[in-house]
Length: 102
Image 1 (spheres, rainbow, N blue to C red):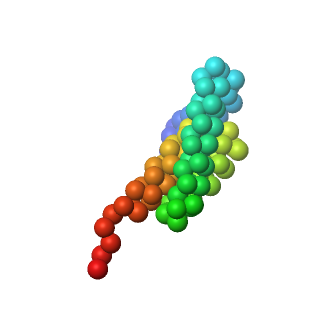
Image 2: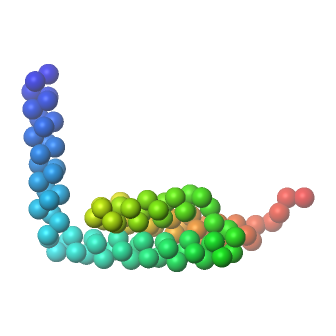
Image 3: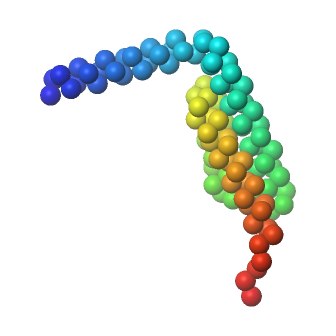
């Protein structure tokens, strides 16, 4: 039991250290750019869906979460959520072309 706790604590410490020191790597800059681009794309897609009255709440919620992740420098989550928000917005717009039930 104690050995497992020690391993868990050491692993957590290594994770924190890699996150702190990894933020200054060249990859982090590219990740930040990719995250900002994904969030910007999502913002445009969500706005387009809203203008067409086709906005799904999943797109709106994912965009909000992506923006929050970006503000917290969680670039991986921001990019993933931004892409998801944009896709949900596109699907909402696409749904407008589906036949209606009678």
